[in-house]
Image (cartoon, rainbow, N blue to C red):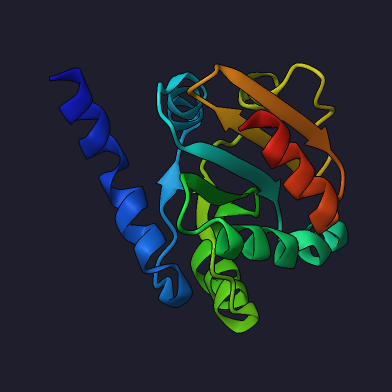
Length: 163
C-alpha cells in the first residue's frame, strides 16, 4: 500500500516530466515534497536545482541541467528545477521564461514564504544563496550539495559520484 501511495504521489511529476518540452503550468510544491524526495527509497537519482529567473548565474547554468537530463533520459535520473521566484510571478513571468528559453527539464515552484523553512532542510551548510544544487540517491542513501553556479562537467561528475 505504501508503494502505491508513493507512486500516486509522484504521478503528477512524472506526467509533467513527460510533457516538459511543452510545460503549460508550474506545479507548486511545499517542503514536505522536499522531505519526501530526500527520504525516498528509489533507484532514481534526483538532481534538484534551486534557482530564480532574476539570478544571472542561475540562468547561465540552466542549459547544463537540460543537457544532463537529455543525456541521462533513458536512465533513472530526474532533473527538477525548483524555482524560488516570487509567487505572484509564477504564471506571468516564470512560465513565460521557461517557454521562451525552451527549458526541457521539469520546473516546479517552491511555495514557501519563509526561506528558513527549507534552507536547512535542503542542506545545513546552505547559506541560502542561489543557485544551489542537491543530488539525491535513494538507493545508497547519499547526497551531494553544491552552492553556486555549476558547469556541465562538474554537474555530471557530481551525478556520477553519487550513482
